[in-house]
Amino acid sequence: QRKDDVTRRGHVLKEAEAAVKQKQGHVDVVEEKIRNMAEEANALDATDHFGNRDRVNAIRRRVETLRLKREDELRELHGEGEVEYFARREYNNALIELRRVEELEPQLIADEKAAMEEGKIIAEMRATQETKSAVRFEKLVRAREQVAVEQHAL
Image (cartoon, rainbow, N blue to C red; front, side, top):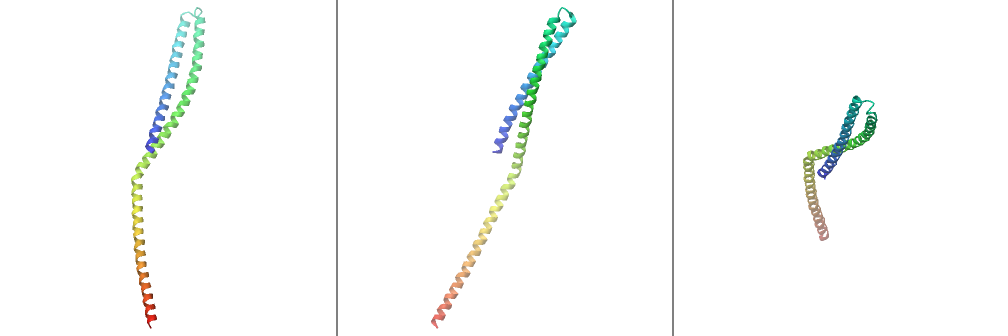
């Protein structure tokens, strides 16, 4: 059962890691676009400031839009990162618990066997004592019967 729990949590962790990688990929793509467009705007501005002004302004507006998109992607990446962190923590905790159980299991089994053996010994001792008590009681009953027979005969 604990092994299944570790396996399930491992799958959740892998999914969370994949989601983080995907979001990081989105952020990287957007940052690359921002860099390329900013370079293009600077190059156009440097070659002919007045002739390319409208085109440069349009590129800079698109860069601003991409920066806003990057901020959204970073927020989503942060959220996915938190999910991954918690999934990793739960996976590690489950793995630690499994190891503890695996370490303790032989000792627990040995303790259980020892307790069962002890219970058998105690049961045998009680049975022996009950048998002895029954024999003594039987002797006492016979002795009383004999005394009663002797007194009746007199």
